[in-house]
Length: 204
Image (tube, rainbow, N blue to C red; front, side):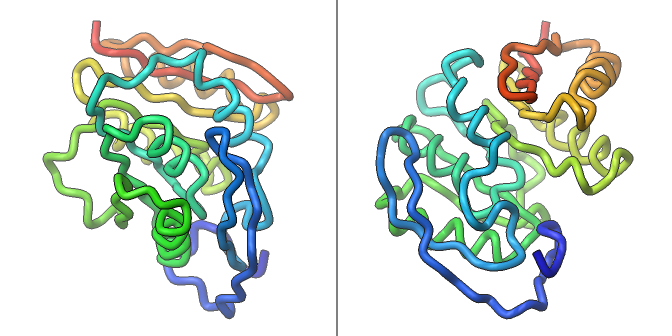
């Protein structure tokens, strides 16, 4: 990539290209571009999360589901297709990522995705579920701030599923989240291909 995927306004040319991918049992013809996370296809961590959704707490009917760091939209699209009664919020600091997610939602024919920047999310926002491949490479301090900010928004019965590479600190991150969120249980609910899925549970 020419720039970091967490650059708010990428300066590189928006060179778009077709992207064929299978999500939620559907073969989709989508679009991607330069300077977005895993722009050439589904990255391994996200693939693990989407393949193991049956091992995380299912969102309630009519849930609000947050895809934190949506990129070109694979998690948001999957959530929207699997839960058509849900309202899916796709949040990313990158304007290019948001444009791609909105376009891919149109291409997939899903209408229950709201694409938005972090600054535009209202203070009252309280999701029932967070599904995320969090941006580990923004650095430990920034990652901790990000996760505390958004897990604090969870509804009392809300949960968060985070996929993190074991070699990128999944186990220490799980311990740290448990220390920071004593009112919620933090557990490793699945492990595959060098990745852990961490789940932040409802308030006890």
